[in-house]
Structure formats: structure tokens, C-alpha cells
Image (cartoon, rainbow, N blue to C red; front, side):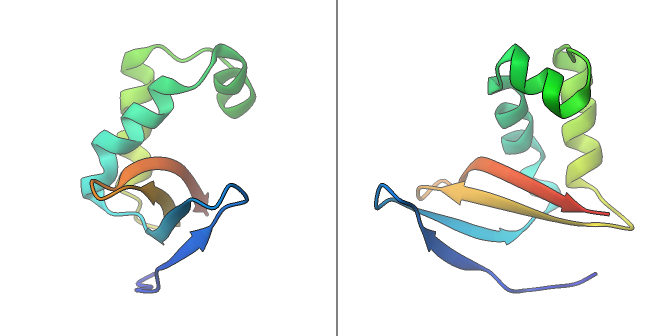
Length: 88
């Protein structure tokens, strides 16, 4: 699926994030996001406590989707990945 829409969303605190299609270049940012999750969040997301290697593999898989579509929420000029979603 090739969707080129993107846009800014204003959050409740007045800050903004850019929502855009996930790209393979987002792998490192996605890996950082997954590694920053608490143990509870990792458990709820993966139903197990992934280690760093497992999270890196998950970030690689998610950032290089073939038959699905992913979005990322990015913050700041460096587009720090602060959220993501995938539609399979």
C-alpha cells in the first residue's frame, strides 16, 4: 500500500507530532522506542518480555513491512519516533 498522506496532530498539552507512513529508515527510531518501553508495556504489547535482540528484530520486521501498512508518530526536527501502529 502506497499512501503519501502525512500531517501534524496537536496533543492535549499543546505539543505537536507528525503522523506519517513508516519507512524502512525508521528502524533505528522504532528500535529506540521499543527499548524505552517499561516491562509492563512490553508484556502487554508482546505477551512476553522481549530482550534487546528480540526488540531489534521486531523493529526490523515492523519497519520493513510487505503486506501491511505502518504509521509512525514523530516529534521534533530530528523526527524522534514516539509512537507507531501497523495495519495488517
